[in-house]
Image (cartoon, rainbow, N blue to C red):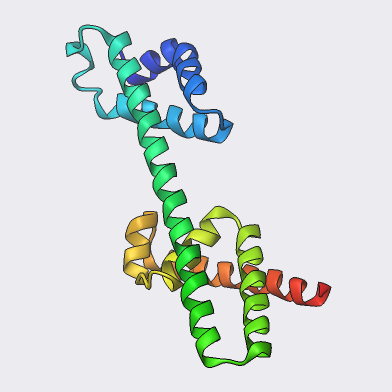
Amino acid sequence: MSPQVIYLENESWLRTVVRSRVPEPEAVEDIMQNIALALVRQKDTLAEINRLGSWLYQVAVRQVLMYRRTRGRRRRFEEGLVKRATTGAVDAVYTAAGPVDRVLAAEQQQSVRAAMDRLNELDRQILLLKYSENWTYQELSEHLGVGEDTVEYRLSKARKRLRVLLSKSVASN
């Protein structure tokens, strides 16, 4: 039997299993796609699997766990970036500047953080990795699975979107 047929025959109950463990609809779709990929990767050995239903269930649960781990890592990473950016930059400003400079720096940080929160996830991630973690275009390319020219283009677009959001923020104040 082909991976496509197996997936279509089992999609309904697999989706129920995944949905019961992950509440976000977008995540459910991503996980279902990963289950389909696992089937395609194992197409040569599918005939050797005795209990296909239990194997599919294990794949679904494993994909859910991998999603949760990735989401947790991403959340901890972003929280760490914010914490490092907040404490490091504010400490440097407080030691080197007067009271007016401190207030201005705190307001600027708040504006940048708010603008970053309004960016889409890919833009925010690529900017944080490039400028907080000092990743190279090659490292970003490997992480995102795209060419370096695409990374350069995405960074340019993300910076432009951030500038627009910051200018709107300044204009509204």
